[in-house]
Picture 1: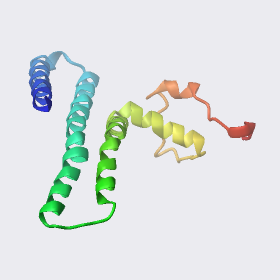
Picture 2 (picture 1 turned 180 degrees about the vertical axis):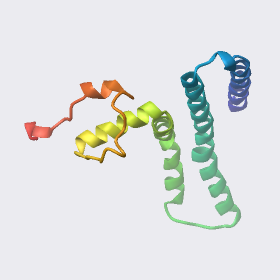
Picture 3 (picture 1 turned 120 degrees about the vertical axis):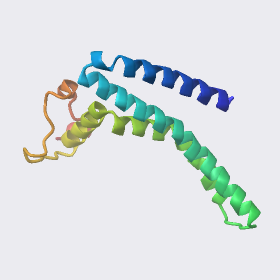
Picture 4 (picture 1 turned 90 degrees about the vertical axis):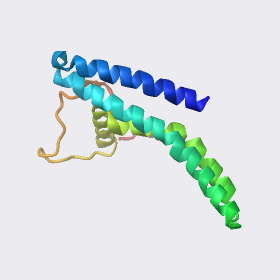
Length: 141
């Protein structure tokens, strides 16, 4: 089942990539940039289950073959699988530039981080940040 899923994903990705390369002269720089970001996300999110599933299995098999016993290792390795959705979400946030800027601005507001003008992000990059206000517990500022 997993092989067929990855096969379909690879085939459709190739078809989209091939079509976009043919139409490249008609695309704006922003469209090309979005396509590159989405391709990176898709590749990363395809690799995350391998890292978070197959790596723990591989470690377990190696330990069984070598007759190594570590208390709690099985539990720790099985808990790694639960982090796949978190890893996929974090990958998306860090790869997509506008998401990254949005999250950075939230942290700037929450933690009152003031940066100098040389490292300040442009305000026109993501205007939705202006509608979010910091949340204070018990009405304190």
